[in-house]
Length: 320
Image (tube, rainbow, N blue to C red; front, top):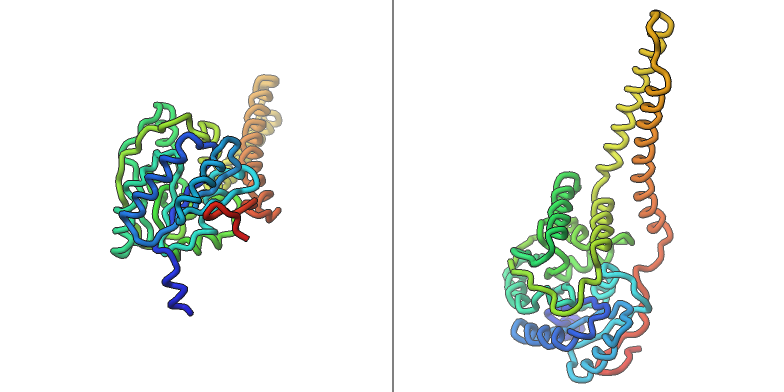
């Protein structure tokens, strides 16, 4: 029975989350199918519809009648990119799994090269961007994020590497078993470790529309990555509070000494306002950082599922 099961197991799974991508669905599936056929004789395409409001799901359902390797995981609503990735990983069954974005900025044509590195022993194959056509603001924000994570992160996260990668089934099982709700996939993948190789590529322009993430979404993702994989903000705020307490205590001793042992005039309103402002600013910073970590803890203790599925489709039909 075990040998029969292994024969039925795909060598390669492709996981792609989609949200309102009706304009490129057909091209995406066609290019994925061609890349997989040239790379592996036995594969599956796991497309996660993350609550799309356009005709993305309709187009996908039509394609399932033509491509037997295509499976659609339809989520009950829009849960977000990282949760959609988690859904795809849960339903994947390949010995190796490729995770990529569905906007065609992750070119399917490099999948065969990634698979070859896995066949040679790599357990994680990262797709590393050598060039990306983005605005100066986005490039600057990305550079600052990687710089910050490189300094304060608990584990090194490779630069210019996003979701696009190939991971061994063993790594998939480890990531699926991680319970946290605040999921930063690049961090989880880096934390798991294992033998890693890289495939470099030039990131093309987006073909249609605009990014569904946006600058605010990128900021939230960066914040999630920092909070999930570093306690540096908490540690340094604790140190800052300690130094400030010591400074204020010394200042208080000086004021008392001047008052009781000298005839010098003690500055009143100005010095008091400066001290109040400094203390208030420090307290605000401390509460702000604490609130971010507390929000993550609040999400974790609720223990809600990462996602909910509405239906699973294959060959134009709903799977039971």
